[in-house]
Image (cartoon, rainbow, N blue to C red; front, top):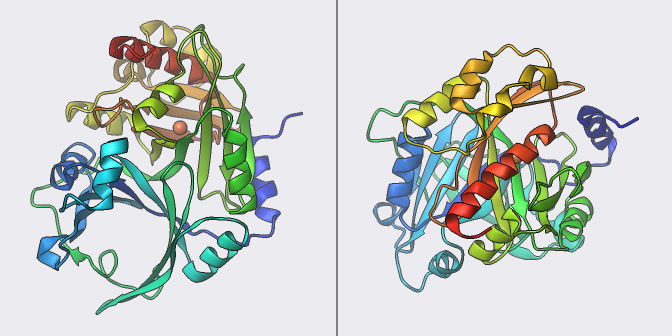
Length: 377
Ligand code: FE2
């Protein structure tokens, strides 16, 4: 019999953990205009600005806004000079995730353990100090031009890290109930998924949690394959997708065509009240993928009893899936920049620890309709 996701996760806890992770520290997104992106994440997504770096703090190269909601921290960064490497990154990829930063107890050891196992170093361990203490950071390369930064902040009490100054939003931001990162998905090139799964297993000590093949994830026209890896305590989960052969162009190929490399496809954020969260996001102008009304006709037959009112879910276009452990509610935004690349998922877990396999077909058909509109199917 197939094991549940929790049973798979329990097996990972027992493995010797050479890279203990306390969670996701932050996600840094390179953007064309950090000031305006920060406004978008405040006004639409309900993040508060908590820290800032830029000309006013003595940084003549880059501007960063640190945005926080519960345990969720985003950093949006732009360059101030034409020759800054961020501008080369932006010219190639457009706005996108550069850093998936992991919160650790020992950034030097994390760097040593991973580089000894073959990780490519991006930043040797470095101690940053100011009047609030010290932060140790180090970094390694992952898929595409994305990096993992290890952040050790146990001896730090400032707003974010040295180089940043505390700052607040300049208007009354209304949070929408976003809590923490549930998982963060990477799209990689055809044939590369297993290499990157092996990287997470061998170099970072993650374990395989789930596998989806092209039979699980296909529509009449397109297909993809996906594997999910998790660290030992389950705080950090990375699904990795690659395109599979179909009659038309897979959404993963479309992503890679526009991002011009592998990269982060979506950030899934947990909420305790998806109806409130999605209602607020819609009121604030965030757009979502739409599934047809027929999706809701036999919903209860498919997923069993749920607490939520199906009519409300239908109105907001929220999807439901269930597994042996319970159910989950989820929805995908449309891409949050002009290129059809990065988007957000909002997820509420009611026991289920899986990823909404029962919704893949409806979601991918919705993406195909978007691709059709973009002329990229
Ligand atoms: Fe997801």
